[in-house]
Image (cartoon, rainbow over all chains, first blue to last red; front, top):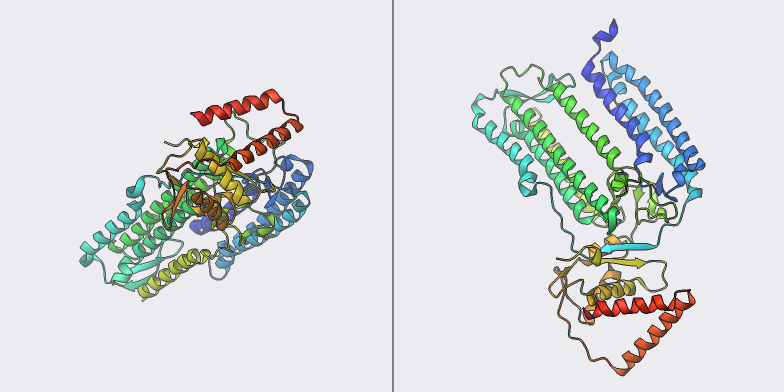
Length: 374
Length: 132
């Protein structure tokens, strides 16, 4: 019974992204706004038409085939040795991403002839935008306080930290990278955690300030505001999760047996699964911009005779249907046309601030890692 | 406290009227109907431009027009604030211009099939709102 000898954490590490990507690929066309289909503005009823259903059917079929091909590669994981294990871990993800992109482009090309002119009506509320973060500043500071408290704890117990500590762990939970005890090695994990939390918080704060409200009145505006609120809570949850994860890894330096595998590997995998599950749950319940929450009278669809509103962006400015490039649009963040959440307007000069912040984070993480390396 | 429904600005990009004019007209109508009081802050040019998906110079032009008419106080970095406006003494030309435009507007409405009684009722409602 060879299967019993499988490296289960490794298998889960390969199956989790494979399943998540396949499920996301199948769900996303069903979660975008009703008047946006494969990144093309269409009439709200188009996806229920025979042409719309046929395009979706073909796309689904392509995704199924790609997912099956990727699944075959996961079999390499059972060999458990490099480079075969790398093929088993990264191969399925690469195949799925490439196949997903090709299926999307093909479906988009088939949707283009059904393009509909979006409504020329625009609205904006003339009340200054009140940006409120869930839980206020105290809840926002929570992840940083957790990491700071762990750093203080490590500093107070400096003498009980061994001379050689693990700084990297393999998928089995066993340490595979070591460093001499130094401030960079001991506080490195907490530092990286703080940087990730800072990046997430800054990006979210900038998004709240700069995102376009598609509707400013009626139940659609209420749904949009609710969607933003739910995503705000989710982002805060992710920050707490990162802080706890990096905090616990930092505390591993205090363990008596440094070579023993991490006791919390399965909880970590379960935590990741919970995180991915939450994303799917929110996406399924809300849909892009919260449109799936429906109308006050309980109906889920928009009136058939209403012109498409879309997302107030012209189709022509969506390069490959995924990248928004519009010099005349002052928005820095716009709703994703194919996905849940927001993306950048790559023609806005301020986009370089965001890219700069992400680059800073990557370089800072790299610098911390290099300093901790033996 | 400002009611949200009364402060929504709507424009039509398909209209032949320039967008800055539509924004200025819409905002002026809200100001005349008392949606804002002196001291109320309006959203920044950038925020309105983002929500309407128009260039910020277009919104800035509308704000400047209303500032010239005495409705708004524009200050760099602090946005636009509604101010107490001195109502100018109407000139004969402006009275005549108003009568002419009102006549043209009602004629257009009648030509579009609207009932004369309904138009009169609408004008009465408008008059009541203005006198509040």
